[in-house]
Length: 359
Image (cartoon, rainbow, N blue to C red; front, side):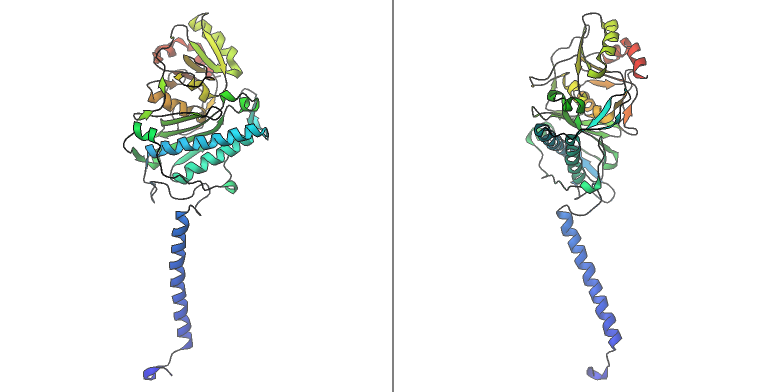
């Protein structure tokens, strides 16, 4: 019998104990969840630990931090690209046909680079939209943490944080540009690329060359580690074009600029943009213009567009329209890229190319 003549009901004692256990369970599970989040465990597929500026409503992200992670992602992806190529075991296969009827190839280099790049960016910035060329399989999820360090070369150029709403950001990843050339062991054309667009406008661009370990980056209205060359030939330009349709562009370019025009066939959109810049890489060819006359995907061109824009250059459709990096993943209107030239005057010179780009 309990003190003071109070009788304890066995049922009441049982209910009280169960309630106590419930409270302890919820407190302990909340503690574990907090501990797991610190180590990047749990969360949605393709997500991971909270990023540097994550909040319940998406919050804001710092473009300077996004640039640091983008550079790291391009380099990490490049390491996979180089490792697979040097192993000479590519596991090459076709994803289908391009609009021109060529095989749209994919290799282990594409897949493994994509995994590293996607999950590094997604873990650091879980609130932003990420578009990537290759499919991301949740079963291959990795938690790849960023050490939160911004490299000195970025801090030197961009001294203060650049905050934007997370919901305004779209990231475009190309884990291996120039896959066709990669399978042919034409290594100089191969790049990995990351672009950050804000409200559809390209703002950050990173182009990394895995086999020479050169990386170009730039932020619009921020800074860059690459610059334009001192001079360009606008009258009889050297024009860099895709290897797959160089003859088509050559015929029309000669009509526009004359017989002294030089056509440089090359692989990879990243390589072609770097051809317009002052790049300290002996394997990099130099051109005055970049022209593309058929359909092209946005992850191929967004990083180059951002870099050119940051340096005062231009990348538009052949009719001179700005390219929006929201919505669909490709553009129909061909491509014209230039720097330190009268871009609109060039557009007016290329009416025939514009028509070709819409075919």
